[in-house]
Amino acid sequence: MILFGVLITVIAVTVWLVLLLLAIDPRRDWAWRRWQYRYPGVEPSDAAYAATRIAAIFGMIFLLGGGVWVYSSYRGLEAAAEESRQERAEWDERYREVQEGYQKLEQERRLRNSQRLTTSPNEDGGEILTFWAASKGKKLTVVYQPSPCHRVTDSPAEETERSVTIHLTEHGSLDGTWGLTCHSKPSEVRARAEVIELGRPLGNRKVYAGDGKVKRCDESPSLSKLCAAVRKDHER
Figure 1 (cartoon, rainbow, N blue to C red):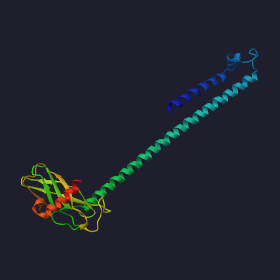
Figure 2 (spheres, one colour):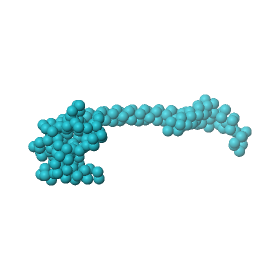
Figure 3 (cartoon, rainbow, N blue to C red):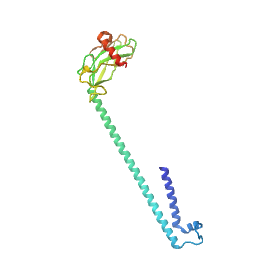
Figure 4 (cartoon, one colour):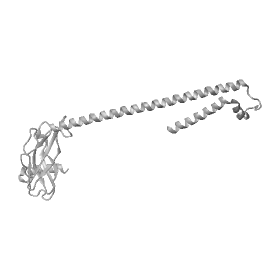
């Protein structure tokens, strides 16, 4: 686009200079181009020279006016483009502010709707049931009953020399789904497994969650059966 504009400008300036020479001395133009005519020895009349001069002057004025109009239009387009860019930047800034505000509100809603899972059922039916872990492994797999319309978003653990305290936190969403099937009864929600990375192997340390000790899968037949079913779902 810039190269095209430069080319048009060069052509316009060249034509304008030629017209200027015609307006100043049309006889010189005749002397240069007389060989093109059938009778090169016959010089045009003064009236013809005057008409050539007038036409050249009008042509100069036309080119000059056209150049001014094109330049003004170009400047106007630049100003409009700059204004459009500024408006878009303002709208982008407003959009970012709205997004940040929405994310902040959403985070506050999630915090208000959050609840820590323990070994006792909460008001929505969620609770920690049991766990399994290899004696030399650093992974602790917690089996928990999720609340309807909630999901676990973080699962840190506090470790000491004698125990590990796990923290499973559920968050509810406004529409009550967040990718989970929202059931009407807690009993319709199947138990799930959550893997927690430990700093060192569990060994013989006891596992706690909030208000009490968490039992291992092998401490009762019912827990063993539950863990087998959850492990099967977890490893799919």
